Image 1: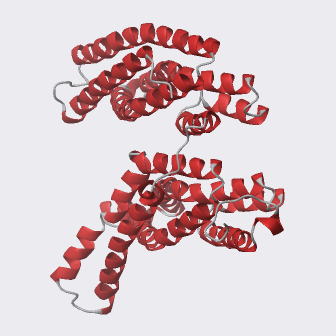
Image 2: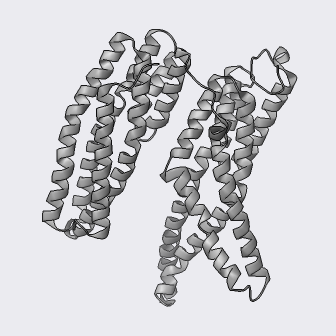
Length: 419
């Protein structure tokens, strides 16, 4: 197996330094030390620090692109996939912290630009998006090299090549695309490994832990409503156990370690035709999330109601006297909270559908299901509540197929039921 190239390692070091810098800027803005972003002098310091890093990064980027082109000419797929995997993963903390820091900068600049309705904040946002995209581009150089090498040797099809080539240059989805490309490259090189027990059960374990806390929370809520008075212990428990949903959001969305491990595991299971492990993991994940999402639904409902009636409380009820205009205002206010709740919950749900969608892809790969069945359940996997029902249907279909054996289905799928 090839090793990570020197330029890739240097670029990784640059991302580590960049993450430290943007973390310092973000914390400085948030705590007003050492930067007061509304002060032009401190703002110049921020631009100078990040600007110097960016100029050095551009030079490194040119070297990295040249290095990726060199690997493509040499046909060194092993080194290309190792470098692609390293660069994309080590860049994640930088982009996460960069988003937080730049959001703070844009917000403060926009608020201070009252005379022009925040136009300066909008222009700064556009500038930062462009600069961040420039930073993104070199991180895809090795992934593109992998795609070119595999397409040149007819190891991948045109659809896989074209789709992932586009995804490599888009924010966020470039990371899962790289994971898929790297695992496919390792499969073609014969170096892919079966995922271990920890990686297969990581998502299930995280969800089960959150759901266990959620069950305790729901029980305390039930006691709170059924008994009067409920007691201080129950009140305190409700307050403390509410933490389950926010912590799960951090683990499943903000810190994407668990989703990325899950994606890599599912791709490996797909490449090794391990349908049994995929369907077991898909079912376990969806069943494990139910209590957690019930708790999350209750919390979101409370938050939406609170945000809707907050203006009434703040105005001591006088807002209601304004008539239809007040209802429109309250509706818009409540919709804002509802949209935020739906988006956050949906982002939490997406990683839980990885195993199910991969199971569908593997069944479709072996023509064990029709394209219509695959498309229908792929959509259902992305819809609240329907995703659980769809997963149970798909896993039941997979179990029937595995129980019947490969001779009747014409498949070669790994299973505990098939020798």
